[in-house]
Structure formats: structure tokens, C-alpha cells
Image 1 (cartoon, rainbow, N blue to C red):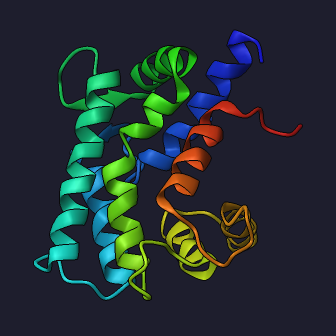
Image 2 (image 1 turned 60 degrees about the vertical axis):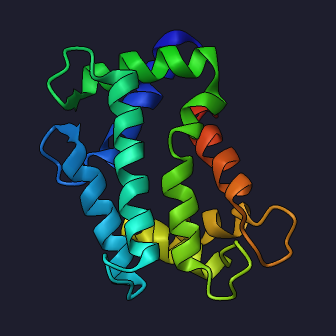
Length: 172
């Protein structure tokens, strides 16, 4: 993938983080995402799982800001996102995914009805729908997350998919 194509792809991912559509990513976008997960799964913010999710969202925001908030204004513009993400992804795509680990771990914990540290594809589909993915693509993606087809999606499955999402070329 050439540099221009790579930057175009990263720019397209910006909207997934800009939850309120105001043109930049900030702490509130991560808070909104966490609250949507809590609501979807009927988990209170004051519960252990809720507190872990909110802390994971904050850690994710801090990691994003550390990578991309060049001017230190606590907002990441599209240009900052593209510049920061492209540099970090070129260097090490899994490092970028690692900033999402606390949040992904907490989301899985909330979606984990069995208490085994994993989520099911239907739970993953619900999560993807929260973040604006259309029904059919959400179902396809959730099924694909269960790469070994054992009915469970682990934290590592999610991290690999997160890194791949930013580094795999889109089909034409």
C-alpha cells in the first residue's frame, strides 16, 4: 500500500472515533462510547465492570492523545490523527492496538455472559452496532473475529482485528 493510499485509509477511520461528529476526537468521544456499551449491556457506571470500562476508555483516550495530539490542546484533528496514526502504524501496528487493550478488555468483560473472559459473536455484533457499524457488516465482522470458530472471541482476537483494521487495504 503506497503512502497516499495508507493516509486515505487512516483518514477514513477518523469518523469511527469522532463519535459526536464535531470534527475532532477528544476525551468525550471515548466517554460516549463507554456509556453506550454500559447502556447496551445494562451495566451501571458505578459497578466494578463499569468503572473498569470508564478507566479503559480514559486510558484509550490518553494513548490516542499521546500518539496524535501534536499541539496539546486535548483534541485530535483529522490531520493530527492521520499524521500520528500513519507514523505509529508504519513503525509498529500492534503498538497502536495496544493503546486500545484496556478498553477492549473491559468491553469483553461486560459482554462476557459466561465469565470465561471471552465474548460471543452475537455480543460482538451488538458492540459493533453501538459504534455505528451497519447490521450486515457487523454480523460478518463479529463472525470473523471468532477465527477458530469455537464460539468465543478473546481479547487477543480483538487486538489482532483492531491492528488489521488500520493496516489492511480496503477492497476496491
